[in-house]
Amino acid sequence: MLRLLGLMFLFCAIPAHAGLFTDDEAHKQIEQLEARVVKLEAANVQIKGISDQQVKSMLDLQSQVEALNGELRKLRGQNDEFVHSLQDGEKRLKDFYVDLDERVRHFEAAEEAAKAAAAATPAPPVVAASADPSDPAPQNRAYESAYALSKAGNHDGAAKAFQEFLKKYPDSAYAANAKYGLGNAQFAMRDYKSALETYQELLVVNANFAKAAEVMFNIAGCQQEMNQNTAAKKTLKQIVAKYPASEAATKANQLLSAAK
Image (cartoon, rainbow, N blue to C red; front, side, top):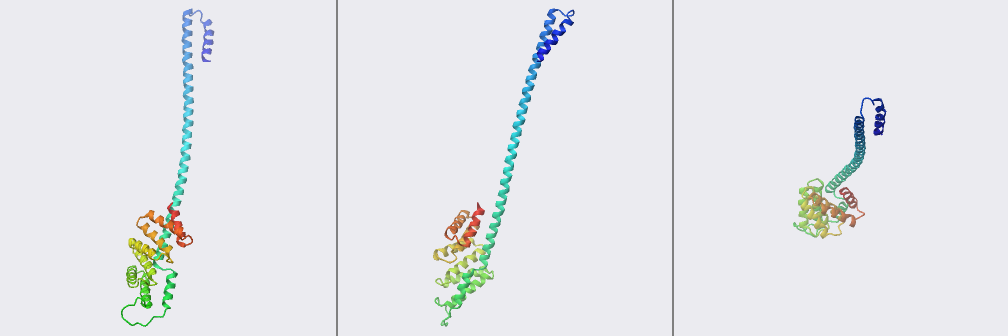
């Protein structure tokens, strides 16, 4: 278009200046004007190309920014979910230790019932100064003494008393409860290795122990304190599988959920 206008202008201008220019000069000026027109057209095409490229680059950049903003929103959402899950897990773990501490300080109703039943048994007359393993009265007194120490928070004294009881009355009806009390005292003193061994031995010797689920739960606690996390998780799963209706299974499920 510019070229055509230039030529028209040229043709219109030539008659007005016919007396001033020769034919050669006119042709020369025409060629110069044509060359300028060609340059202008090329420059216009180049400018248009650059403009289109810039627009495309800006659109691409905008798309990238929007995509990055989307990823950022997604990551923020995931981070919020992770923080919430971590807080929930910490709360469940805290509840676990609070409950375990309560178990260490207070034996459950089954032990109280066992003591009451033993106390109701008439004591035979004492015929010798040495203890008779078959006499329930000394056993009862020895067990109650160890239990009282544990209840008072004297875990070291309780551990020694339970150990002495088990040594003196290995076949006593209180033996399983005494071993359970020993494990709890050891756990309270943070002797997790000894507590773990005591609990495991208890389940081997007394597979049908009434508090087996609780013992396994305490075993998981020892394993966790000793950084045996894989073993602790396995023990918790065994509790859920073997004692699904127990309170220990409920708490085991909570811990397993928090660990995910």
